[in-house]
Image (tube, rainbow, N blue to C red):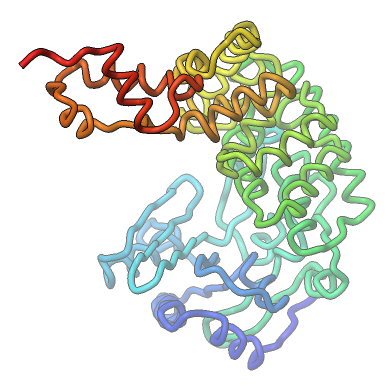
Length: 446
């Protein structure tokens, strides 16, 4: 495929799709680049979504093509020049990958990711890529799918020109997701997850050839993880996969993220999370029920998925995927919580005793317990989460003062005992509560 020119239309579309501050920033970028003899291109998802008529996020990817400046890759030098002109921006530089990011919070959130035109090589499957400066053509070839290998030139002499070297425009029109080369998924398994996410988000079909390549890569990584010991996962199966899972599990509707997980399971790609993970009807039911709980989409949904694994395996996977420390604690506590609650809950337990038992566990852990344990355990925990933990004592500290009790540690004891009696049905209403307190805690004599 060659260069496709849609100069005037794309400039007009781009101007209409971006905020005034983003438009002004791109003009500033183009001016700085031209003064240094560089070419700048808008690339990736923003171009794809622009051509599809989807609202653009104010988070734009730019590729800078040209020679270094005083030893600095052009993307980094350009980002530093922008930061010098506007010190209110937040600058981060990644020298190893010849990239930089700039972010603004005012007047509206806006971010630029600037990348030096480069080619990549992977020293081993799922490794972090090794990069070296190159041309725009090779930079586009290193990307995941043809629909993301489109670019719009922002600088003279061809501002507004669409560059399509791999048939991305045709695949957009045909609603097809196609990898750029056969080794793509072995190089980087996160591309399997991205491809499925784009398929479910955009309603596009993954080519039959690519589905076969995804299955082969998934089987390869299943075997690799079986051989690898704890802590030896390559980055493409660790932190990078965790970031991709966050994007997938926070897609807007159940239809999207559940469909994506189901498609990944059909491809065998859930093995990239852990080779022992099974996409069962029980897990699917738990994920649907999780929407009724207070578990956040991320990382709560991944906690539900990892909870299906054995205790050691779930801890290893959670660490490898770089889940937050709080999630690590939830998964670490789950086995102990289940053992305690399943063994102790029974018809002999009163609601007040159950509350004491449940208070030792976080709400997220209790939600995981309810999802995994239907029947009596679920009913007890659900009653605690929705009723008992929300029930206040029928009297307040002010009420106790008016009844002649003196402020102090006894206040807490009185209110806790009174709450327990209320939960167990021994006390109903204010009058009975006053009688209960007076009979169990005689007020001090004047």
